[in-house]
Amino acid sequence: MPVTTTTKQYYSDALFGSLLVTVTRPATGATSWVYTDVLGQAVATTQWSFSGGLTNTRTTYDSLGRVVRTTAPYFTGQTQYATITHYDQYGRVDSVQKELGPIDGSSFPTTSTTTLTYAGSAITTR
Image 1: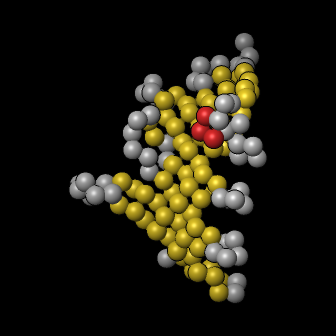
Image 2 (image 1 turned 180 degrees about the horizontal axis):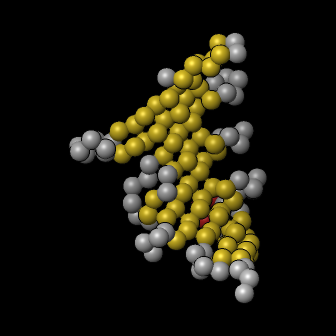
């Protein structure tokens, strides 16, 4: 018996700032939802996790359509940790900040920042 996947698209009523919702139901039953904006960019996803709960991601774009913030997958109602991308005046990525949450046993959130420096054809990452 062949494995089939059913995909349907629905117009959204601005859920997550989206225009269109694409629902995919594979033969495994692990339904997923992708919410896209007027430019066709994914602004949110929801899918079933292995534990049976729903996991989500969110993506934010700037006025030029570049990703500026995207969340790591999180369960509904839990803390969201994001990756934030900053661009220089030429549209190049000049820093990426990752929110890691509390990882050292304390209750204070930790972040990791990668900074890129452009000098001619050389790119330095710190």
